[in-house]
Image 1 (cartoon, one colour):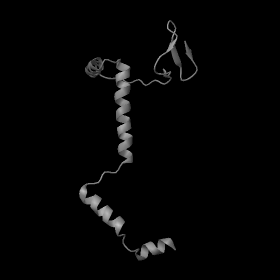
Image 2: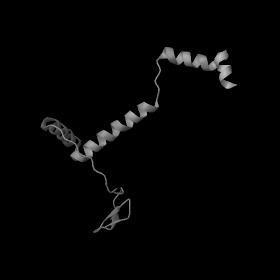
Image 3: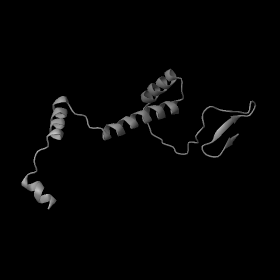
Image 4: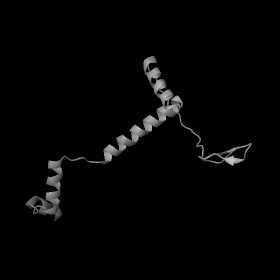
Length: 103
């Protein structure tokens, strides 16, 4: 038996709540791929001991989170980091253009 979103399912025979709430998946994504690509993904899912859909969702979500994180993080090499820290510690005096901008 499942009740309201997120649906929480119970084991009818033991009347125990399953450890995780089962979220109803309402959206769908479809795509086409070659036989070789599908077989490769199926093999990887089988090695992970999860369904093809679960494998694809897990891998894609992990990559999406990495892509979003990389968009929010700026990486500096040592030289640029040192220059930034030096500039923050000893900021240059405002030039004429900057003073004019703030007027």
